[in-house]
Image (cartoon, rainbow, N blue to C red; front, side, top):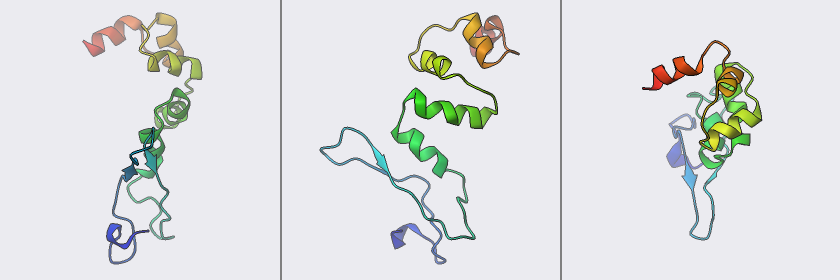
Length: 107
């Protein structure tokens, strides 16, 4: 790792580093090799991929891990495409939430 991005013990102190060359069509990120005693100290490295790959296929595993519930790829694609929510879709993502309750929460 570049020394200017580490502390005096060699532990990375950068949370996010993205780059895009003039000829690129997307953003890039690298990987961080943390010293054994400092494995991902702020937990942010798992988000690097989501910053550069905004696809439903990349977001779906994050959703399942973050909320600890299954999220079908079809449902994630539907929401990602900004399509209207239906009672069935909302129930498939969270059976404890109704479409009316969700509408009330977001208004």
